[in-house]
Image: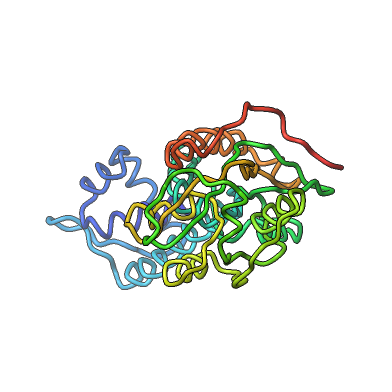
Length: 311
């Protein structure tokens, strides 16, 4: 008794006709009959009753049919599980603004060219994505200001300018100097956040003092507070695209100096060995065009260079 014989037997019982079963299995009827005969001889029982309308299972055939269906279903399940175990998988982290603007595009582009790649997407702020990469909880990240780290590589892709975000009572969209921006009471992320670090570093370099109204870890929380009160925020334009379009927030480019941060594709050593990594890189590079178009002149793709890697 083998799997082919069981498959043929099940199909014959379901079709109730040898000729029809042979056609569905795409084999010659004599060959099918021989397989069924060998199965009966091997088991030492008669499995089918032949009659004018076709065939029907004997009592022994009914028992074998039920068990054969169970066996074949179990074999199919085992094969699926083994194929899934053999699939490449990647845990990919993106910032909230990137998830909103290019997350779906990235997933669709990669899935189209690497349909067997299992992708898990995570959304978090840049410094938390970096932490997750270092703890081996993520394989790849798209994050801003990713530092050098042992065992990881990074590739600079894009630079993005920050904007002053205010409630819609301020309809001015003209560029504003960094000094004028700091005249507002500010709602900023926690100190480890890249935007907060850049704002504080630039203020120190120019001898300016921040008026910190609130410290909020959540980007959505910052946007809600800015929309409701007199305080402003300094954020990437991509973070507030939807709110600016809806008229619930206003944004002004910051100049003199421009506050600019760099986006990196970074990964673990394991991710560097992924067969699908070239496909992922191509999809990310293509998505930079979408990102640049979305932020209307406040984003700047960088020329392609080989990723930097630390031992």
